[in-house]
Length: 191
Image (cartoon, rainbow, N blue to C red; front, side, top):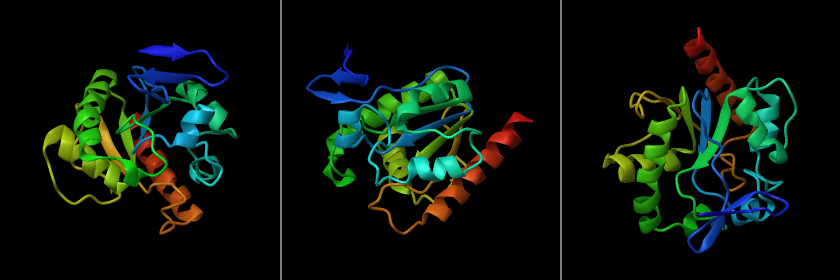
């Protein structure tokens, strides 16, 4: 694995570039996307597509007390927030992923999450969490938004709607509401 020193930090894994994980011990929340978009990898930051609603909802939520942009993704480690993905192979859309991708990457994600043991693992989208369960734990069951009964090691699991523009079922206000619920859990676990 080699790290590119271009304008944006991008990892080179096997035959493709991807986003680096922003993980370290002691994090309060790790956001887990399904996989990076090709655009985000080209730019070098999570949720970089201007049509993606993550940063707009994140900034309107109570998760941090400052305005942030995709370029600030790595700096959020100082706020106890990290980023990674279920699958590290970038695609134009999630539908471009194959079963082999989940089989390869979900167990790797599980190892990382157990190693770093964040207080909360927040999956973006029910599909992301469901495929993680299926390919990391061999569990195939329906998933709902919000807090989950299953844990990953010592980490609580919380599922928020996917902020992708393809997921128009949830409005920006809905996303803000779910991020605020995540913040409530964060505060509850901190006290």
